[in-house]
Image 1 (tube, rainbow, N blue to C red):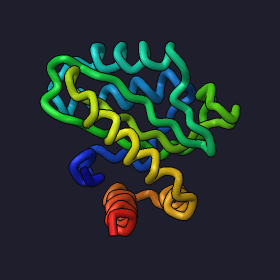
Image 2 (image 1 turned 180 degrees about the vertical axis):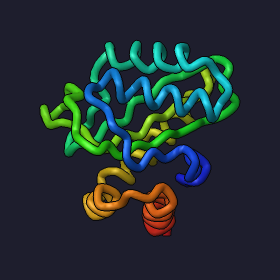
Image 3 (image 1 turned 30 degrees about the horizontal axis):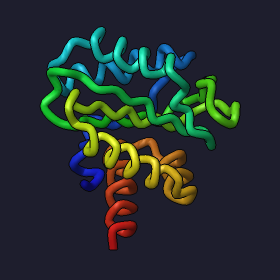
Length: 154
């Protein structure tokens, strides 16, 4: 499973302006709804319910919110680079400026976990994350992610 199967350049928000965790999740849900045809509210409520179980802010300014939806056809990712970090209740208490939303079909068990693992591994690469933070172009961010994944696979 490569990053290009999880996300495409049209699912990258390179300059998202948001003032709170909730607003970030709403914007990502809106983009996911546009990409999947599912209801924005259903996506938002699913992701919010998962956040209530424990923050998906993993540290170093990164969050990987995720959820499972019954009517989703396959795993879908939406990526955002925030213009200004927001509080996200992260494990390290640091604000977040890199967010990768991952949505999976209800019965996707192992595939969902593999996708989460793949995204987490990608975003643990500090060099790639720093390059993403300096980039304002969706296609350039996509290229950084896919190139990093290809190198990790080799």
